[in-house]
Image (cartoon, rainbow, N blue to C red):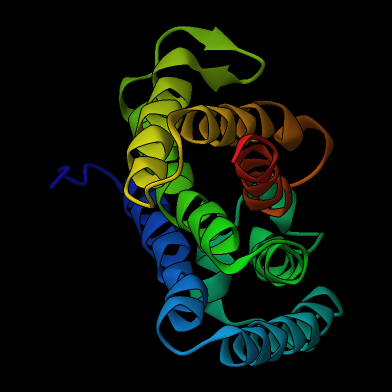
Length: 190
């Protein structure tokens, strides 16, 4: 395990662990089915919408949540809202195996790239690090290969997800685009 060196690092680690907890949606889809996973994603999304409205209006101000927010999230919705919404959209648009794979990439590769990039990233481009982006690409390749897609689909899905992670944060939250882009790449080359 990576040693925690400061309160800021501890907060980032907790954010990454929270990100990984998003595996509950694709695991529900994988083991129980689409209806149950859609219901869970809708339930989470509705809860987050209500919580975000209350938080942004100043009615709800949980200190634990506040301590985990990035500066840009203090006055706008958090990435969790995009995360739940993207999982819902991904399940509605793509087949089971493609959707589950795209959501796994979001839940695992995105926090891993953040960890690698913030700890060891030195070569910066587009506001990201080469090390973090490389970690995203390689972990995506491994995750997608576990689903037994053809090699061109694995490479296409991993590259599409990596490009979404690299460029979307400048325009919108990468949590929204990663599973959609990855799943599209898989679908296109499957």
